[in-house]
Length: 130
Image (cartoon, rainbow, N blue to C red; front, side, top):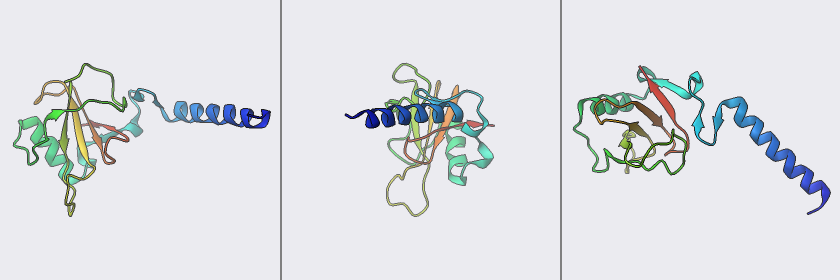
């Protein structure tokens, strides 16, 4: 690797790190308290608000995989022991599959410590706030 390529690589890494710091997103996910990383129940799609209500009521859920353990392999949510997080499908109108929208909650099933919404199949999360 030439000197010019090495400098470009270091500069690219620095710029990526700077972008993560300025947006509040790090290796462990969103910084706590960042308003841009939250979504209110009222801001969720209608199907998301309905799924959230069903979670707090303990069901019923329309999909077999709803309530199954979410492994957090992407490490975008705060670290916890396996089994802490559970995932639920947010139906997408017109989709023939479960789609890409989910709510992931951590803690007790009907009284979760925190719930997160993803519209892009776990590529990003926003904490759900009342």
